Amino acid sequence: ALYKRDPIFFFDEIQNVPNWEKFVNRMHEKGLKVFVTGSNANLLSSEIATSLTGRNKTITLFPFSFGEYLKFLGKSPVVNRLTSEAISRIQADFNDYMKFGGFPLVVQEQDLELINTYFQDILYRDIIARYRISQVNELKQISLYLASNTGKLFSFSTLQLISGVKSTNSVKSYLDYLGQSYLFFYLKKFDYSLKKQIMNSRKVYAIDPAVSNRLGFRFSENRGRVLETIIFLQLLRMKQDVFYHSGKKECDFIVQEGLTVTQAIQVVHELNETNLKREVEGLLEAMTAYGLDKGILITADNQLKSGTITDQIEVIPVWKWLLSHTIY
Image (cartoon, rainbow, N blue to C red):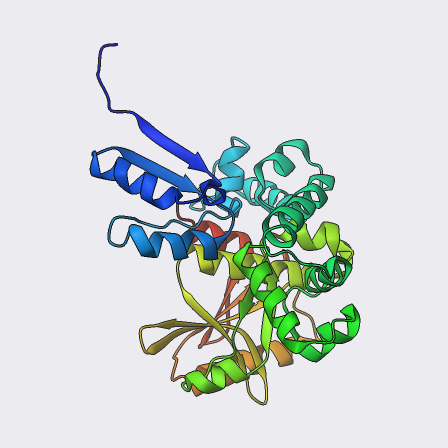
């Protein structure tokens, strides 16, 4: 070899091996570079905290963002100076992304059936077997309900009712397991009181739009919630602290940096006479509540050009917002 390089070690799902963290720590002390990957956030983080404190950097990998999706397909994610023809192509690509999501093999094969395989593997390997769950069908019912209701509020009582699980604590545990395995994320209502944040109802979002498209609802009937899921996941990729706003009106996303709310974002698939007033008023209410001069309304409406509805609200096509906020 022309260049001598130290080996780099990769270990996948190493949390299944007893005392793995001590082994990795010894490798680190020898100056070796080690990458550890796993599909369960809780197990990895708890073990890293014991033996590898200050010696690790955690990176959360999501399915492809829209920009990564385009690059994977060999297409350019550039947003500046696009012709109308190029914009039409990007919009068509985004429609495919809304359907197939960002799991690489699903994108490559254009096969949503793979989502069912992933779902079953995660459910049985990372949750049922690991936590020795006996209420398998009940857990499945909760999972499918969440997949069908991405972007919606949920309650413990509803999950108990649809699943038949009698214990509220069991439902809470199942939700924790599903979150730790990265199948679902839970969005809190914004409140300056942490106690109220914990007490208020949460929204659920699937890890990828394809999860809901395959396991939950009919895609054609729920484009709005798929769009909302995509924006939420992009905000997570950007490492933003995200909440939803609910007062007399509602706003989809509130972004907080430190102790300050910096953004209010409303997401709507298509603006029309039926929803325009509701969406704008919800955004304006959030802006007023948190002292914001500007708000963002993201839409997939191809007929609506970028611009402003009022001096305070910027309207931006979803593809443009996503590609302008892509992190590689």
